[in-house]
Length: 344
Figure 1: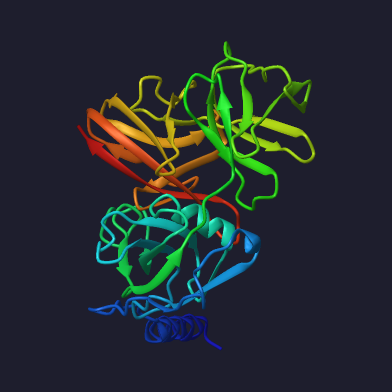
Figure 2 (figure 1 turned 180 degrees about the vertical axis):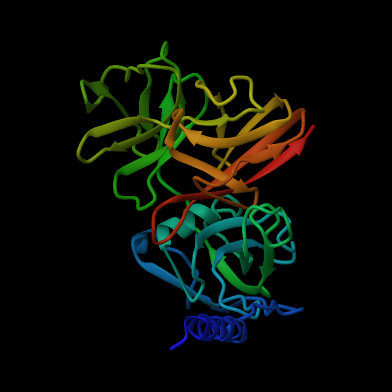
């Protein structure tokens, strides 16, 4: 066959292949009015009881439908009936909304931040979905400006139970750790002072626990603290044991006083709201949150959708009050959260 004819036929074939690919291309188009998620069912009873603290409760819903297959993060939220979620609590987050599971004790702990113990409250629940279509351009639907869709709410009568506690004595401030299951195992975030050894008092039984090395002892010596700061303190009054793990949430980034270097600007924990809070002056730049001055645990992204290793958060210069709510994502166990950044 003539060489020029071979080249010509090859060229014709390539053109045909090109037009074939263009014809088969699938276009993704977003609905002008995406279908919002729904919260289909609540657990049969929301009269929570400590004796059933390890039981699993199930909330079911449907996914947001933007007109194409999309991945979204879903948040289960609650507020006092009629408050229109202006002062809501995030119960949990998940990457799917069909079946959202939580233990009785975890739900009780979340709702105690907003509702009184041992009495009936009327509570509105909803699912909020955060949809990121693409990243990096700053356009609507990107990680900087995600699409947010909210389900209609469902109302239920809820009763949460109060928790047994151990009070910290001589720690310098009034604080406590609590037992979610009432089984003698207590935990909580506490602010400790290296100059103030403390004891733990059970106000119901009028028993004071101190330390003997790494063990709890009734009427024992004060528990020593290696360095001042926030800790996750756990105590078992049946096994007579305790642990203290540093848990110092800090603000880091080019907008902070130390930039991206340690030490971070440490936040304080508000046990009433379950949030970490700081008021500080920032320069124009970026911020993120991390634990114990280490990148192994960090949060970034957008204020209503913080994730592990998320993007930097850009702020203008000014004095801010920043509140961080940490949410452990199910089922991965990875850290997620939300925050508010308010200029003073």
